[in-house]
Length: 334
Image (cartoon, rainbow, N blue to C red; front, top):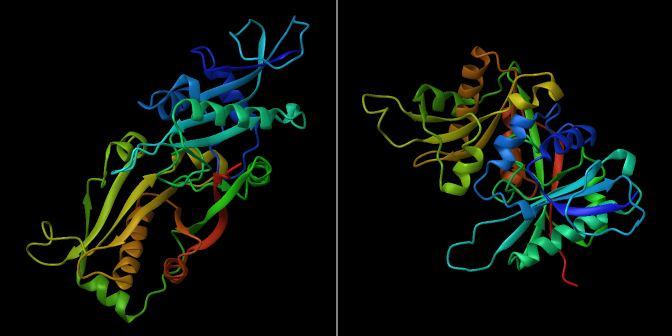
């Protein structure tokens, strides 16, 4: 049956969700995705452009088998899709970066070159919309649509637990530009804290704060998830108003419950403030763990750049263990 590449239409979400759930994307992808969630996290985004969601459909009752791009026909079967978007222009530059969030092909249709056709169509679509650089498997600030759907607490590139993704990107001419380590820690893990961490806990108190939404790009993606910020502040009369010694943003991961069979929370933007350091970050995570354990959360997840040895060493001391890795890509020249 003939194959057609075409842009998104309003009647496509049921087929797209079925394809996502059938694709076998591994532990780092939401399983049992529903139309409502897909609509909320992808289609309802202000930056969604139907031209950036390209479907590969097979149409019954036609004789010409050559792939084409044309208006949809009835009795279609969706075999794959590519999801792309443009990133906001960076301050002081007019450069537009195009991002390829996903290229999915139904398991029954693999081995026919369909993935490459979709990738080529995705690149063409981004070029036509003004992209001068193209990335794939973007990090936390570079994924237009997969926040909350793929990667866990944040997009982290194409995951090793999604085994077809990395070789496919490399075969399509993308080069590696960074690696992310995904780490997890059970909340019932025995605490390991030295003297400096214990002192930091004694002299600081945990408080809640609104999430630190730095701009509209952050708010429109992470703002669609359950988020909260915990901070450590010096104990005393002015603790509620003083600067934070350390802070971390919590991201709800309930959508991953069916895949992980655990109630999980992601940790993002773990940062020290004025007067803070590694012991305060360690103390903050331990206090956060205690608070979340009381709320029946039994798993924490956090990401770190694979090249950041200092951050990885701190997370290991706190009790986090690597469970996956992600690779970020950029399209090579030529």
